[in-house]
Length: 55
Image (tube, one colour):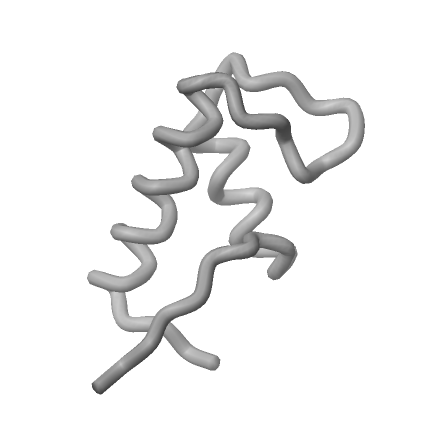
């Protein structure tokens, strides 16, 4: 599924907040020192447990 730039920004922001608040990384061997970069990597690899429902 292709996401709009607004959906992408919302997903990355939400995941970066989760990581900065102590959520475990979905990538093995990565720490949360740069939460946004880690969220981007997870998004690019398609392993985020976040879905978008459009109405």
